[in-house]
Figure (cartoon, rainbow, N blue to C red):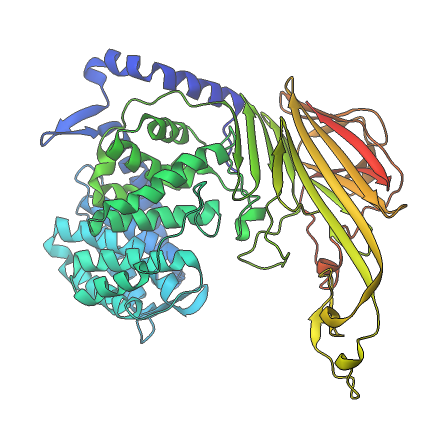
Length: 593
């Protein structure tokens, strides 16, 4: 996970405030110069060229026939070398050996294509994965075409063959997920720019007529930081190449929202995602080109400030500088200087009502409260199903998540039925009802006993019992409420679990590994009990105090419930796990400071 340490973060904030003065004082050392009547960010371009050259140098040694392994990286390798070959300031400009490596790669790409023009990357003969590859190859083809070096005529001819053959597949091929539609459209727009054909634009129009969904908060359908980047990239490409400026509107809305999903170190909050990143740490670095483009195009100081902040992130060298020169050469607006940035807000409270997520920030302290899983709760890609409902950070000290599990008919973790605000408080709530089932009514009975395979009313299991037509009895109820209150720099969570008495309840706090815990009892295997009083977690110079504790039982395994245990599954993550336990009726308040 790429981090910005606290010192770097403070320096970055200072540099943002001083940026206008630094520009005025720079004089002859100004990193911006005029070219052809337009101002260029020569400092950024020089950094890109230097990083690209360094990367190209490693590729010159690594790209050999016996070492090639086909993946999306093959496209990136081609684009990096193409950018080096076409950049006059590059030490590899029109280098013969680079040209030979490009020839080797394009032959390898052609050999990897199936008869229908698709490639096998992840999925088999996949139009979407082919489109992801073309989104890299087409800009590379564009800069080679503009450079038009005679020594690369054969490479360009072979590359055209690869792209046009892929275009045949993309103009008729299907998709799996919402973002795939726009990735294919963006790739077709790029192919059409290089080698115009109405069949490409007809297919784009066919997909576009389905409409582009964005909720009122700024989420695309998958509600994913990972795939928001994919969709922003597709919209930006189509807006530029198809002259459809309206497609920039969803980008603006998404980028405006995403800032409030950023932790001070650049990590993105992804707990509400409907895709795999709901459990994967991701940073804001991959959003750089979108913030930069929109900042320059709109002269937006807010987006410019975020772009500047990303430039100071640890991952900027590897994730942007080393692989993005080809993008800047193809999309020349990116070469222009950023406008003067504004100071970024570091004190806010934002409730995102469509995903039921609260973000609160006070300088370097942040809290996240989440109650927006998709109902009915189904564990599947494309559905929000994370049991993590509270996250808290103070600088480098990170509470990765808080969960609550009850041993109530093996229902497992608590998942809230939304998040609502009442006055200055935010409330998570869910009532569970677990029944027993009576005999079927006479008109529903079958002599052969062959009843519908159906889910239980509480969703825990399936059986050939036709549950929906059965009367129920002996219904047991469990109500869970979590009330969030922010006061005087502290967060208080009032946890209440009522209903059936004597049910074991387990509160799980998972802190980032590598820190130090005090005030807890070590139970082995990165497990700890907070039996009473307050405890502290320290990492670096930052500390989270939390508690008080309680211990009524020591059952801390198989907390996920029957949905997971049936498949021998687990949601346990790496980290330092602190447990607070009780039994119903339970009322317990936790303070985080």
